[in-house]
Amino acid sequence: MSGSAQTSERQPHAAVVYNPTKAPLERIRTAVAEHERGIGWRPTRWYETASDDAGRAAAAQAAAGGPAVVIVAGGDGTVRAVAEVIRGTGIPVALIPSGTGNLLARDLGTPLNDVTASVSVAFTGVDRAVDVGVAEVEDEDGVRRAHVFMVMAGIGLDAQMAKDTSAIAKKRLGWFAYVTPIARSIVANRLFHLTYRIDGGRSRSTRAHTVIVGNCGTLTGNMLLIPAAVIDDGLLDVVIMRPAGPFGWAQIGTRLTLQSAARRSRFTRRWLSRSPDLHALGYVQGEQFEARFDTPHAVELDGDPFGHVIRARISVGPGALHVRVAAPLSPVS
Image (cartoon, rainbow, N blue to C red):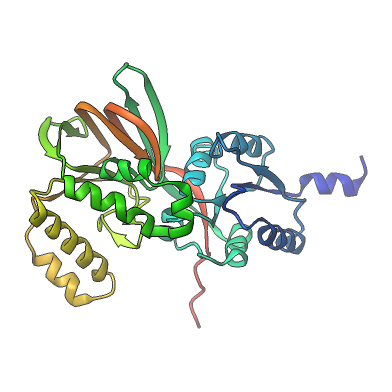
């Protein structure tokens, strides 16, 4: 083998896992080619997701080639599928947000609606170790499965939204596609019974409309649901919504609106810090959340439905995934 060939083999390469129905592929290819030439990397390898696989198989093929970075072009569901394969390998993941919510990308400050900037981060950014949620669930037939999530796991309204909102509606309407299922669920206001415990502690019983276990804190529409959520703190934040009729929903809506506004208003932050907790909106935090339901309930992970379950054990994998983010700006001297 010639010296130039040996040098070429030692040069790193990137891999791109992309959802062909969401990713602006030609723009991505152009930007990737420009960056790989600029830093002398070998040609990037491309892996397309399948209609019946959000990205696990593509991610496994990409990882087998030993890439320096796996670039994910798709929505939160594609990112979740890739994370399920790549976590724990040490291979960094970079994001090109191409979905409806792009909640992980928003949380990490990844450029949105800017392919060139996102690709630049993939090749020149720094790696941040972030937590991964692991949901072990059991259905009424006793079948157990385990999946990861990066943003949130939801049971109740959140899961029903994922089940009832079509991909076409989300693509055409964005956040507004969720308005009808939200309104229908609020009007019905059906509560279910669950028994839960945090970190193996004392079991508690309650009735709830929605349970969300968050690794990130912001919902679609930039609504701040979990102010305390930090993606690399080694903890999960659990929200239990238990509204007592329309007034309870009004309280929840007001509180979420104020929490979102508090990111921009010092007065609102001060007011919230002094306001009492809401019974309709309970928060708990820990490394593991276990729950048992009297009847099967739908569960969603990062916006994708995963069937009905009667038990769930949701835990956190601290720093299990490395995500490439923009390098901090150097201080001006």
